[in-house]
Length: 200
Ligand SMILES: Cc1cc2nc3c(=O)[nH]c(=O)nc-3n(C[C@H](O)[C@H](O)[C@H](O)COP(=O)(O)O)c2cc1C
Image (cartoon, rainbow, N blue to C red; front, side):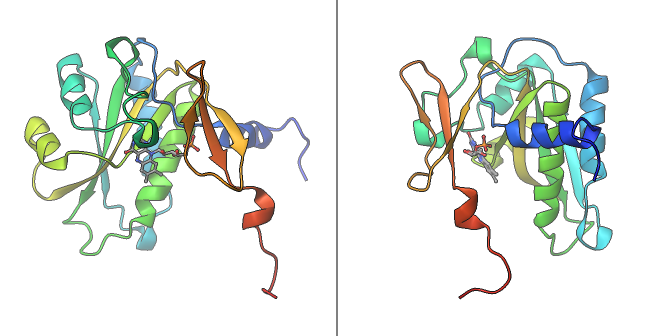
């Protein structure tokens, strides 16, 4: 076993403390950081190592507004967690599936890549919101995405302007906003989801 203060323990803390961020601070994120984040997705595990995922980064202000108009933030508390202009994401990562690289893409690849992105964002002091609720027809048109690239999902990214609170809850799955506009995120308790060996 490694010592408590090892790099692994820092990463573990980041994994536990990462929460979805939907409100951002208006600070530009450098392309070198963005490149590092995408590089972490590139190196994620891939079924049969087919590596069918590609990434479109949108960081131009006029196009950011276009992407914003295609995604839905915070379904359970809609529209109270839709960021206004001052709290909008700095950039977006659009996760694309290249149909020419796999006939039957295993979506577990996307899960692994997206989680690497979310954790890398956290490592660089940034936050992200993975979004599947997208107007894909509109987004394809606005960004001229070619037909052989399937739009899987979008990750809205930037420096966090909110600090959601984690709650252990067996009775609730919906995230909610309190009177101070803090987001609470329920998670099922470990004892309910962890099983050892055989079932009774
Ligand atoms: C596949 C997937 C799709 C999601 N789609 C959306 C979405 O369309 N809009 C949104 O605001 N959040 C979306 N989320 C974020 C979830 O709401 C969030 O992960 C969940 O509430 C748990 O919060 P946590 O990420 O802080 O643990 C999505 C998450 C996943 C994994």
